[in-house]
Length: 274
Length: 310
Image (tube, rainbow over all chains, first blue to last red; front, side, top):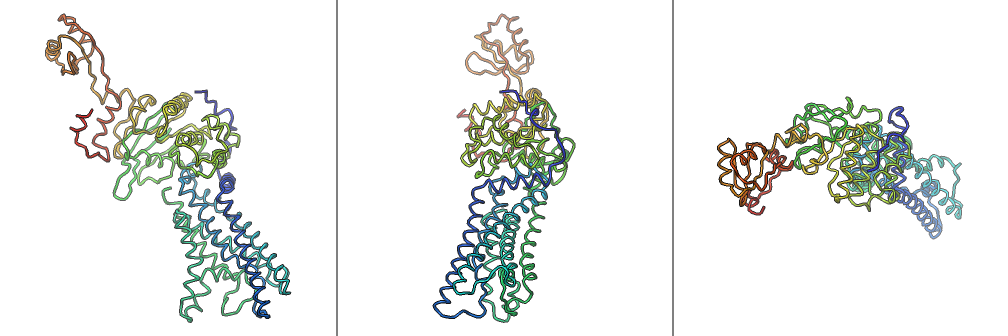
């Protein structure tokens, strides 16, 4: 055994382990896992790829039919990949937290920083930033590629078009909040498969179940369905019966679901044994 | 210094830890012993505030663990070597831990060197053997150069070389004045490592004493005598208040009389001795004896069968 002159290399203790260190730590965690990086790239690939595919398909349909529907929303039409992108980012949102539970890493993390709200807030902040950047790249790229495709029919719009910039940024926020919803569910459920299933249930299955509602109920229910509430913010052409509250109020409803999950998650994260 | 006072943890209707009070002092290795399921890991998780006690308190350095300004500077813990994300490299794993307590990044290569993992610093932990994970966990525990080190079953799954390495490391850390708290369900391991013992069974404190005291208190000292006049000596021993029982041909196991007295008795009576040796019961025997009633799961094998095969 060599002598353990461990102390000599450490600077004297200053301050207190807090949010700054936790942020750096969470950034190291998220960036050092191949699975998160791959899934982030997949979110962009799926969103941009499917948006492009849809824009291309719409252009062909319109050309074949020889007419463009008057309600066609060129902005929304270039962002359809978000519908699937939200599911991929939900996977990351869940994994960021459930990955720690699945491996037991959470106990190592919380032993290093036992002030749990610090750890959770740092993790949430880093994920939000990463998701927002991923969303912005996905949304802007989808928009620009889509408008380029639409320009062949002269139906493309620029970012200066009414509500276009709001919708493109809204698309990024939509992806981010979908990820946060999964993060909240992951914090509650502590289980990757369970959290992803729950997130898909909230984001997607509610949308499918809605189709089976009787008409008079459906009209009232629609604005509360996460997908409809969340997609208003990346839509420029709306019919009054579809989007009653306006894009930001609807987005607030969508965000509300994520906030509920996050608050319950934070309470359980704080209270339960790790 | 770790201090537990009335520490209790209840899971449903099962008491995992029951009114546990003890103090772990600096400068020595304190062994935390108990059969599987005795509540050792639960106690250690409560020390680190991973689990909340149902009742009682436990402090490190006089403070609740969550109130320590820089926890890694005070306590380094290895609870479960597999509590790591296998997708991360050893270096990144240590870096993300170091960052939480604002420890400099240069500590990472230093502790990797210390545990002999420099070669695999850039390798993913998923491919590590259990022994390598144990070393990585110890590296993580040492990151903050802490005053208190806590290891839960650190030798599990290690080869003899690894066991020796950990044992020497713990001794060296204690010699530097640190508080070392190490759990084990194997008494034989502690016998060579620990200075002090805290023994629990079914969540309750059974013993809190030095290793020597533990052996003396819990095992009868016997003297083995080999002599051609076994029967005659047995009679003398009995006459002088001791007990002698035969242990094979020409051999007696004497209890109740010190070794010197047995030798004197033989000499005074002209009995030829071929062997006169103290028999110290091992710590393992003493431990088994002590915790027999508090083992959570008894194997369903009749004791007579065990006796016949041993």
